[in-house]
Length: 285
Image (cartoon, rainbow, N blue to C red; front, side, top):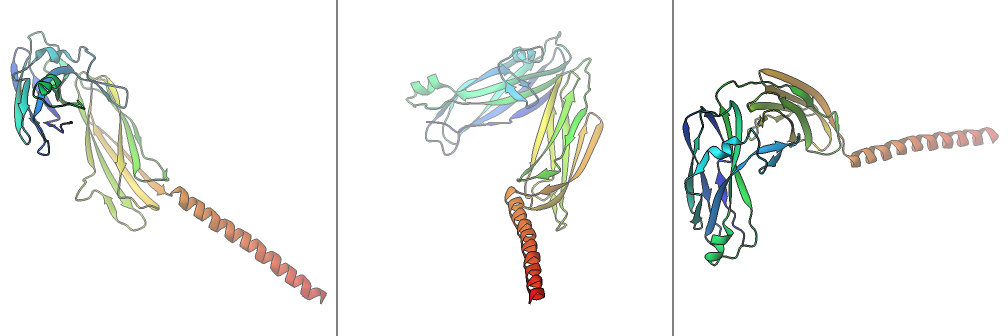
């Protein structure tokens, strides 16, 4: 069987000082729709990212994942009945020699296959969920970075329309980049973003000494039309504004328009030729 367990929060931030100890916790829940008990185990792993797409790396240790050795989970194993939850406490003991700057780790929650087997539960699929720890250690911290790209396409054949940005962090602590999107249908005058369900605001964490490409898909757009898109990015005390009118024209519309135009052209040519033939026939008679 496969247990659809839930872990919260998915991430949390800590401001740390050398020589001090901090407390934290996560909650693990066994889904109410589960048909059996859920035996879990928790381990501490490093957390970093790879490439501009920010693929998670939960295996590679670095000078930014020293916090892994500072974390102690008080109750790393247990069993939950369906619809039952457990609070998992942990401590972060920061050494006096801890370097200033960002430190990152993950609390990996997974099925304890051995315990489940002992309980007579057949496990067909074991997966893990990571609750991330973002920590900044006090000291000589450095903030730096810039908005390298702020891109909105001018033409799209399909919806949703994707907007992008490229943001760098040259400092030694993580920072937050906030993107605000505004979208208006230029034909109907309708405001598409912000709406009551989506305020058009998104926030992303930019890790130290990395460059991140952010992508957002704008939904609720017309199948055919023109929309005005504005993307404003706030980061590291600076802002970048890009505004562009986006023509949305699917391939089928282009084909239909081409056929119609060709029909009009050929119809016009045929009409002219027919008129000339009739005119010539009248002259002969």
